[in-house]
Length: 200
Figure 1 (tube, rainbow, N blue to C red):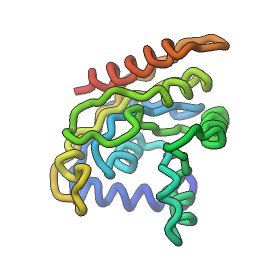
Figure 2 (figure 1 turned 180 degrees about the horizontal axis):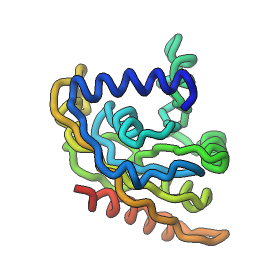
Figure 3 (figure 1 turned 135 degrees about the vertical axis):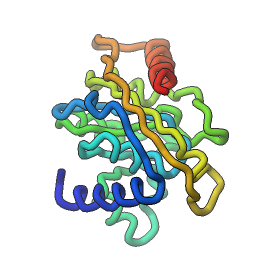
């Protein structure tokens, strides 16, 4: 881990263990080398840092570009391995960045649903993560976070207490090939949510 990320990791670890008494299982499934696309359900602001902490490997995050506009945040977020992505339009630059990170052997965390759940349940996945997985041809690592919705759901201004748990599943491979259809992306997106849903 890079020095600042290691510092950030320890801060997150202190909060995750001390405040929310978080547990994790399945860390042995996390590949320690090479590009990996980690995917998780999305129910809370706490998801990115908590899931990344559970994996124990330096993680790259994606965040909507508007979060980088306030002063200081445009400097702080990149230091925390967060990278801006425009969710309101086709972001070719963002796509190229994600593919480069995976090619360079990074672990990238994405949320296939695209937005936080309003009721804590699993949602239908968008095809973005599936498209990236197909193009990058890297292992897909399913994860599922429990308790985060109760701790900090969408619409609440401040987090509360709820014990959290992260389950990490076994990685699986995307379909191979040079060209992919919309139907293949949709099928893989559905498979991603099915693999996440299996984690209990």
